[in-house]
Image (cartoon, rainbow, N blue to C red; front, side):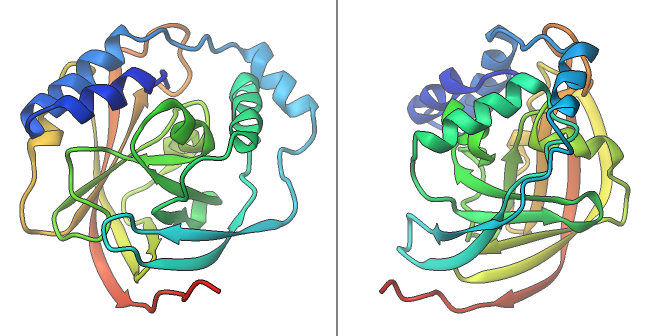
Amino acid sequence: MVRFSRVASLFRSAPDLLAAGTALILALTALPARAETDSGLAAAGAAGSGMVAGAVPTWLQNPWTGDVRLVNVPAPDQRLWNAARVEDYTVALSQGGTPPLALMAIDRLSLEAPVYNGIDELALDRGLGRIPGMAKIHETGHVGISGHRDGFFRVLKDLQTGDRIRLQTATRNEVFEVRDFSIVDKHDDRILHENGPERRLTLVTCYPFYFVGHAPKRYIVHAVPVSTVDGQATPRP
């Protein structure tokens, strides 16, 4: 997955969703890609199993409503990650940043990751990012979440239709079901235009998952809600 630091600034200046979507696709193609090699993966495996014990108490925060919720965010399973991506993650944790909006999990794939607001470099090195220009995390409508293909979202290569995606926010617990997938050209931004009143979730990453140079395509996961439970925000002490 390529870097997104320039994409965030493009989104902030985009006057509408059309401009935002076009900016995302064009910026993705212009950014330098991370080289992926088998030796890099071997180096990551040589460091151990990739599993780090323990979880970190973390405040989920909705910046639009002010609601917060205390959750435990587990250390990621990094066994499939590119070795350089593991290093980027470690450095990003030391830099701090804004709190996440949500915690997203796909239990069958052992994926559980914080979701931050935006797709800047720091957000995607720390976890996943809500795509600006699409629905806010607490709104009805089409929510888009992006992640690196050589980090958190590499497990999507093994995703299947019918898999469940859990999304926990400051005030809600939702479960989505994967309906289908699509692979599109890196210039195809139509998915970003599909916004409406229906609640749905789309995951986006670069494709192929193992590729040296600029990834030529985008891997899209389409999911629909199957259950929603309104929770209670946690009062801050």
